[in-house]
Image 1 (tube, rainbow, N blue to C red):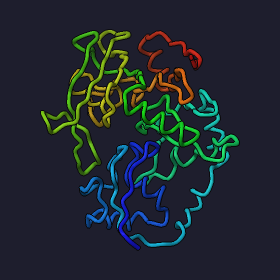
Image 2 (image 1 turned 180 degrees about the horizontal axis):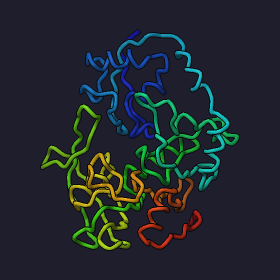
Image 3 (image 1 turned 45 degrees about the vertical axis):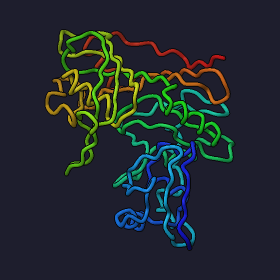
Amino acid sequence: MTIQHRTVHAADADSRLDRWFRRHFPQLTQGALQKLLRTGQIRVDGKRAEANTRLERGQEIRIPPLPEGPAPEAAPRERGVSEADARLLETMILYRDDSVIALNKPHGLPVQGGPNIRRHLDGMLDALRFGHEERPRLVHRLDRDTSGVILLARDPRAAGRLAAAFRGRDAEKTYWAIVVGQPQYQAGRIDMPLAKLGGPHGERTAPAEGREGAHAITEFSTVDVARRHATWLELRPLTGRTHQLRVHCAAALECPILGDGKYGGQAAHLDNLSHSLHLHARAIRVPHPEGGTLEVTAPLPPHMLESFETLGFEKPRTPPPRRQG
C-alpha cells in the first residue's frame, strides 16, 4: 500500500470529499475517513480538508495507504429502492432523453445523505436507469426544503458537460420565492459576499466582508405584492453559494423567505400560511450535452400553491419542457 495522488475529473466536480471517497474507495468506512481527515493524512491541493469540502475539477487529492477489501455491506434499507419510492420518482419526472433526466424534487426530500439521513434522492436513482447500464448521477443540488427542477446525467460524458455548464455559469437558474414584507426596490442586483459558519445547530451562511467571504450575486425582480405583507419574487442566482438566496433575501432585502426560520426567525412566518420554506427552483435553461439548449420548468409544490391562493397571487401556468437546436 502506497500514497496515491488523484486528480478530480469533471464528472466529480462539486462533489463532497466524503462522497468522492465513498464512490472511489467503498471499502473505507466513514469513521476511518474521518480519522484520516482529522490527522491530515488526506489533503486536497496540499491542504487539510473537511468531509464536506466541495471538490473542483483539476484539484489533486492525496490518498494515504487504505485498507483493502470489499465495500462494507449496506444496511437493509439501502440495498434497493422501495416500490413506493420508485413510483414517487416516476411522478417527479419532468423530462427524459438518452442523456438527461429532469425531476421536480418535492419539498422536504434531501438530495444526498448525511448524518441521520437514510432516505434521500441520490439513494433512489437506481430506479431511474430505464435500461441504461449506469445509474443517473446528480450534477447539481437543491436544499432539502427547496423544491423544483433538478437535473440528472445518464452517463459520464453528459455529467461532465452538464457539470461544466453549471460551473461556467452557462446554466440559467430561475427561482420563485414568497418573502415576508416588500423589498425597497422592485428589482435589482444583490452583490453580497458570503461565508460559511459553524455552530451548535449546524452549518450556517452569513454575510461576510472583503476577502473573508465568497463572491455571491443574485438578481431579483418583483412579480406581485400582497398588501405589503408578502411579495412574490423571481430570483436569478449568478453564483451558487450555500443558502445564497435565503441569506440574500433576509440580510440584503430585509425580507426573509416565508417559512425560513433558520435565517428569518419568527419574522419569516405569517399567520394562516404554511411554515414550510417557500423557495422553488422554477426553471433551468442549460446547454444540452448533445447540442442545443434544454429548458425545463417545474410546477409549484402544494404548500406554495395554497399560499398563492391565500395571498391572491395568480396561479401560474407551467410550460412544457423544450429542447431547441
